[in-house]
Image 1: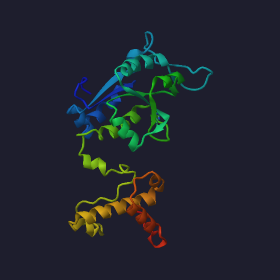
Image 2: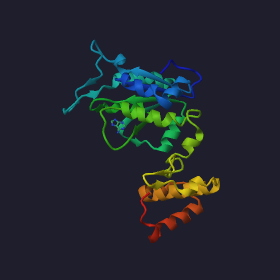
Image 3: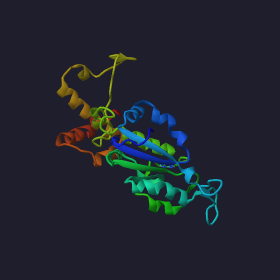
Image 4: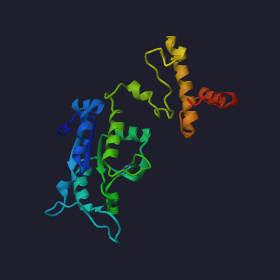
Length: 254
Ligand code: ADE
């Protein structure tokens, strides 16, 4: 949230009517540190500054009638255009957009410069869609505006920027290879009668890696079988899945 820094690996500009919503999330934890260290730069732009007339109006009644107010195109155009000209990929947060997924987050993380446009009120004038490069939704539900979705996108993207967290940690994330991540354990060795799987205490790295892969496959098969269609699977993975699908393996829901 500091001023623009040449060295930032990723620059994100956010166009919003509520810049204050970003204060705490952008100052906290992993994202806060990435901004503090200048690896990523986030600049907030208050859309109200481009509002029209004495009241700096940004919305108006819908043509054809109906409930609610619609965001006018001119203030958004005035805010977006300089960012586009500076080379930003312009992303509108909108429930009708493409779904935010791990591959999309990785793609956006390597884009160099993003401009996130947050809608508010009941909607935006349709012509604003022609000012943006892509539209992104964080899921099939409607929020009161694009600010929280923009924060979700920023969090998902910034943690993938090199140097923000250990590469190993997002390489083993759920979704990184198209699978859910398997179970993880820390101390104590036994908790409420539940013991840590002995293989994790064995010190045998090969066995641990094989066990983790098997558990990731098992969890994905049980919880999100749809992900297996596009997952990166080896022949061994396919045999393991066939084994897991055999009737006697069918009862665990991990
Ligand atoms: N604005 C309102 N709801 C949204 C959603 N689900 N995703 C992105 N932007 C939104």
